[in-house]
Image (cartoon, rainbow over all chains, first blue to last red; front, side, top):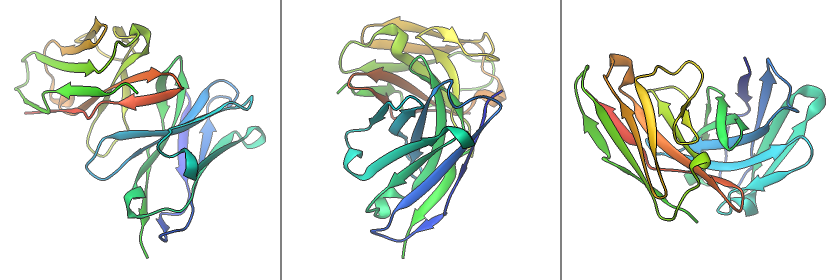
Length: 116
Length: 108
């Protein structure tokens, strides 16, 4: 069973960069597309973007100008950078693995707070 | 961009009752791209139904999905205490993106 675990700073200053990594265990990172999804406190789900080990990347158009995703096959992990963050980027960030347009596997999520 | 709306926003029922949750799309959605998730408090979303009507591994058969075009439904035939959660529908369209509905809170 594939398991995902997010890691990274829990507190980021305004105008800074939010950086998260997702470790994939119990499966190969070459088997799926890998996504980031966030959920602001008390709100719904927002897809951020996805990446594939062969180089394919898709981003949510609303965030595309501030986001980059990367993948490290040797470490079986993928990462997210979100630039120029504001308080509106405070959220629980989930990593997820997808198959056939559905998000099958989810990490437990990590709360990232943007504050000075 | 396809927008999903879910109704009702909150549904109050009792264990043993039947729940019917609606997801409506602003444009027609290909059935294979319509998905449902369950999110319990403090937990990550869990895949429940994919391709409109297929239960994910380990999902009890009291959960069922149906629909086509712009109207989709998640039905829980007999509510168990652990079913009280928030349910999101999701669709995938082009350019590649996932979009979620705002969710239906199912409460006792």
